[in-house]
Image 1 (cartoon, helix red, strand yellow):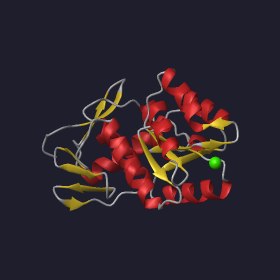
Image 2 (tube, rainbow, N blue to C red):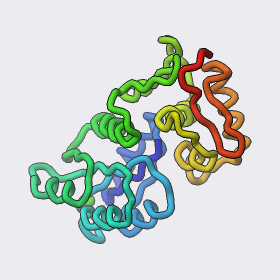
Image 3 (cartoon, rainbow, N blue to C red):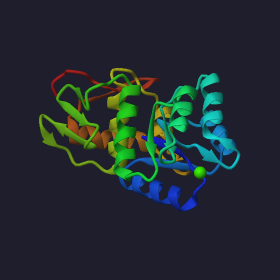
Length: 222
Ligand code: CA
């Protein structure tokens, strides 16, 4: 899961980014609307956390522009306490959810996971494909009810495949959502990680679709 955090308060941005990264998310930070505008237009994110008070305009104005361009990713706005009018403006501009400052980092994390799950069409917090279950709230994977130990990167890769299932996910899409921008892998790295996941989850759980990418093999016994 890759998040763009748009926040001009440097200490707040760094603190939140660190906590979200510790939880296994990829986080890029933009300190103003113009930078965020460039990033959402050129990179793929799973969600945006958007502060409303930015140095180059209100976050709602930037958000309206993104929605007009058809950029449909989930947006969680950060608003100052007691400013109901801010929340209303945020929703009217196309926000999906909000959190009031000061906030608990865990709340942002839970809301982001729910937003991303919903964006993929999943209402239930546990997404099941065959005997594999991803608990999106607890960020845990089980196979036939038994917890599977995964590295942060393996978890991101598998989580993206499970969210997208039964769709085929290209290597390009995986590299955009699973790896940091400055460490974009060649497809060999992805192949190696998929092999490791197959060893942990069962060899037939992730299918290779020649020339297209990967997908979760639904329902088949491992
Ligand atoms: Ca601000």
